Length: 235
Image (cartoon, rainbow, N blue to C red; front, side, top):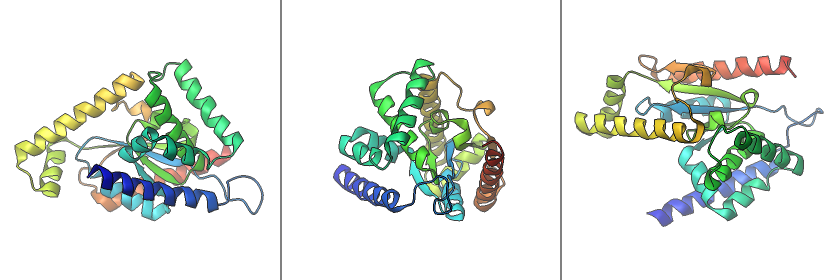
């Protein structure tokens, strides 16, 4: 299974690298597209985040990078190198300076793997037009270069969602939700010394209870467009 997963990962990254290499680089001039910041999504387990992110990405035409994919790229030196090479020297320098600044200011632990992980997130951020899910991406990127979203819902609603999606007994679903939430909170505390549900870490906190997948995705898209419009006035 691990070999299949890594083969699939390799194919996904190769496709994405090819897409980045062919795409015109954002910048000034009529032939260059405008930079479109990424969206970072943090979520409590059981919020139907996968479906919501997929819908939002389809509406915006953005690529999706889930936390596991980003982590596996950071673990593989060859994949990391191929991703880094999609940026020009100026953009690479900007990513490296931002990451170094995070370490110096102790926003996260200067762990070697985590340093590599943050550079991969930074590279995706410099390309724009993507949604990055999990791994604390909202705390790795400059706030003006991303829309930071947190998806939440009451515990019982999230447990119900897991029961419906996976067909597991309610107590198993509850245990799964609580354990994963604990892991995600611990991750953010370890690397960012922060509470992942602190609303000041995000641009919008969206309670998905009763909203439905489409409405939640529409709200994210509208928020992204509003932040992009505001961003233009400040540049």
